[in-house]
Structures are given as structure tokens and as C-alpha cells.
Length: 536
Image (tube, rainbow, N blue to C red; front, side, top):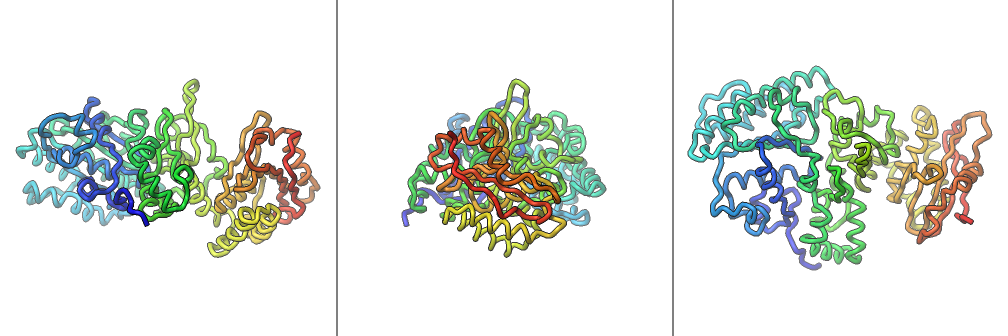
């Protein structure tokens, strides 16, 4: 085994530890300089969980503490050319420990948050209310020698106390009142603050949480900060290129193939209107550290609120492959949210795919294979009612048939048997539901699946890009008591609408597949049609 170019900071989020421990670090310090110099001193950034927000806050903390020794060779050392950096009192308030907090434990949580700082600044009898305690801390820090430079407040995961109760209006209102009081001193202490930076996953409206803090600038979708969190394609191909070469050797593949596999699994994020390629940093670093490409981010925990909301909605995963929306609709305040799309975007399960400047509309979609496969595994029991053991066994047999043996016929036989065991109340009630079932099945198999593929003459239901074959599939739904449509009708539609034309230059054989779901039998007909894809 060859020695890795770096140590990989899996689970390490302290900037000092990364810099002194020889860990891999993608230099984000130029963004910090830009944030500080851009004018104004109140900033808000939202990014999905495990996307590097905490490391960014830790890096800011070191900078404002004047720790120039930790920045040698980094962009910020070149940009801030002062011989010594001024030290500021820094109040770093990490609310991540508030996740799942109950009302009766709030005081205990705030004691843990404020206690060390109150001891540091000699506050012996803290006030009862969290806002009053924060106000006292800011003023005490301002009174120290370093306080002459102004106090810096860094709030990480500001929304952690609220996300767990967002679908419980009464509890949300009570928590919101507590957090509004907590943040209330930040506006009136503007003269004492040098900088305020707040991070979180979601977006709660300023009126409901931040009260009078109406000068808080949201930089989340500004193009200049598009790469502030995550690993950019330029970073992967530049400073991280030796790591990709090493990792490719560990996997036994060429660097180009390794890079493509990493791109398919972890790339695809975009947070602004400007084009960008952002890799999930947690998954990318975890894959280097563990020597395996696997679903690390999705496997680290999906918010229950999101899963429940997605299950209650009428939106299916195929439809989420392409969603058009304005920024105000998907970057909307979280409370009172009736649509699943904003929460999925803010949580990282949807991302920006493109931007139409003419109509100022964004196209959103699922970022990558890791998210698509993870969502499919989470939602398949909802669609089928089958146990994990049953599902895993089916997926294994289906995968061997489709990918190893290259037999769509054998794969469809496995699918027919699997769907026949779906409880009556979960069986597909229309073509949309049937298509959703097939989508999650193929995503679990690992085949590259695209749904509702637009062409010049219509929309292809499903395109499956297996290793040896590209399948163009038309799905039909036949109601009980009817004789049509048939699988022959499905093939005829593929031909009549020219669905194969976009694949004429395909490197792999193209095969047409017609499948009919029978409402009466509650599974697919056995007389599916599989035919070569001649386009003549």
C-alpha cells in the first residue's frame, strides 16, 4: 500500500488541529478576507449539514484571534499583509449540541454554551435569560484590552434548536421566542462588535428569529461565495490532484476513471446562479480516508422531518430530477413551509442545476448518485412495504440479472415477483406512482437512471445506462378491465416519437423496452417487449 499524500481529516473540524496535524486542507481563507473586507459586519451563510461550515467558523476564529502562525502559505497570509494581526475577543457559539433539545433542557444547554465564557470574563452571577447573558458577555469582552478591537461573535448551526420542532407549530413558537430573545443583543451591540457570522442549514425569516437584526446580509447565493464550502473541481484537479492519483492506485483504476467515479458519486452541488462544480467535502474526504467510494454523507443521517415531509407530499423522486423554481420559492423561510422543495434544497438533497437569466428561474435537481441512491433506499419501504432484508435480496438478484448477466428479461422477472408482493394499499394507483417505484429500484441497483428525459418530440419515461447496454424504456399503466395499452403500444410510441434518435451515436447497444403495469394484477405484465434499437 502506497503512502497517502496527506492525512485525511475525517471528523476533524478544528482549524488548528488540521494545520498542526498535517491534514489535507482546501484553502478557503481567501473567502474570509473577502467577507471581512466587503463592507458591513453582519453575515449569514446557509449550507447543508457536514459541508464544512464548522471548519469555516473555526478558521474565522483563528484569524480573529490573530493566529497568523496557522495561516502560513495560505491565501489569507498573502491578502492580510500586516506584520501582526490584531487579536479580538471571540465568542464562538456552537448550537449543534441543541439538536433534539426539549424545552426543559434549554437552560442546561445554554449553561454549557455560556459557562466557559462567563468564567473567562469573570461573570459570577449570570442572568436568567439567554439574551441577557449574551449581552453581558459581549460587554465584558469589550472591556478587555483586546476588546478595543471589537468583539467577534460566530454562531454555528443557529437553527439546530428549531429544526426538530418545525412541524409542531406550538413548540416551534415557544422555541422561536426563546431564540429571538437570545439573538436580541446582537443589534443593540453593533458598536461593540467587529464582526458577526451566523451559519445554519435552513433559512428562518428575520422577523421570526433575529427580531431587529435587519442588517444581516445573506451571502448564501452570492456567486463570489459559491465555493466557500465544499471542494471545487479546481481544487480537486489542482491541490488535491496527488490525492486522486494515489486513490486511483488504491482502487486499481486509472486517475481519469477515479475522478469520474468521484464526480458521479459526490459532485453536482451548486449554490449560486453561476456555474460551479462542488463536491460534498465530507464524502470526498471520507472516501480518501477509508479507501472506498461509498455513501458517507447520506449514511450519516437524514433529517426525519424531511423524510416525513417527502412521504406526505405528492412529489416523486423522478419529478425531483428537474424542478423549475424562482429563488424566492426554494430559498424560502423554513417555518410554515408547505412545499418539500425548499427544505430539500436547503438540506442538500436538491441543488441548482442551471439558471435562466431571461426569466430569472432556476432548475433544481438531485445532485449526484450518493443522494439519489440514498433517497431511493429511504423511500423504497414507503413505496413497497417490503422489509430491508427482502429489499436487499431483491436488489442483489435484480442487479446480477441486469448488470452482470446483461439480461433485462431476467431483471424484469425479478421485478414482477417483487411488485406482486407489495401490499394492496401501497400498490401503484397510476402511471406516476408506478414510474416512481421503478425509479427507486433502478437507483438502488446502481444503474444510471434518468427519468422524464426530454427530447425534441416528447419525453422518454426512463433511460437506463447499464455498463453494456443503454435501455430506452416506455412505461404504460393499464386499468382493470381494459385491454390496452400493451407492451407493443409502448414500443410503438418509442418508434413513432423518435426516442432513439438522441442515442444514435451511443458507444453501447441501444435496446427498446416496453413495460405495462396491470392495475388488476398489481404488478407488471409478463409479456413485456424487449427489442433492438434500430433507428432506421
